[in-house]
Length: 185
Image (cartoon, rainbow, N blue to C red; front, side, top):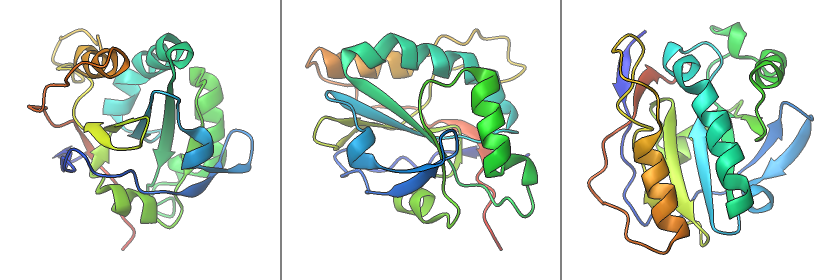
């Protein structure tokens, strides 16, 4: 497990479009059909990463708390399933069901979407406004496996709340940290 920070895509960047298979219902989904009316949180996650496992409940809580407020969450796994078969589509479906994901869990088989977003780690968060312009790319909060800091989601929740309320989002954002995306060789 290599501790990897996110790449911090420049704020204002337009969300790269995509069409990917939702492993939960086996349907092709596009960014435009999944985006929220006020904002969209695109998350690069996977099944086996201890950093993602550490925050799974917080991700479900985020989705439950903000869906009715116009913020949709989209999870994407881009890991190389040849070398990490536990991150394959069938396992993703099981993982989503086991963890109570109420958001789509999409499979980026070609890894083109992760590259378009300059995603580097799991979890990696990209919050876009209603026009799909990036307003936040950073950590969920300061909690990491083993550091005894409670998972609150305060950094990301603060950004989402500001977006919903039409307030400025602090441009000084701390990178997310996690396992590197498992790139194909």
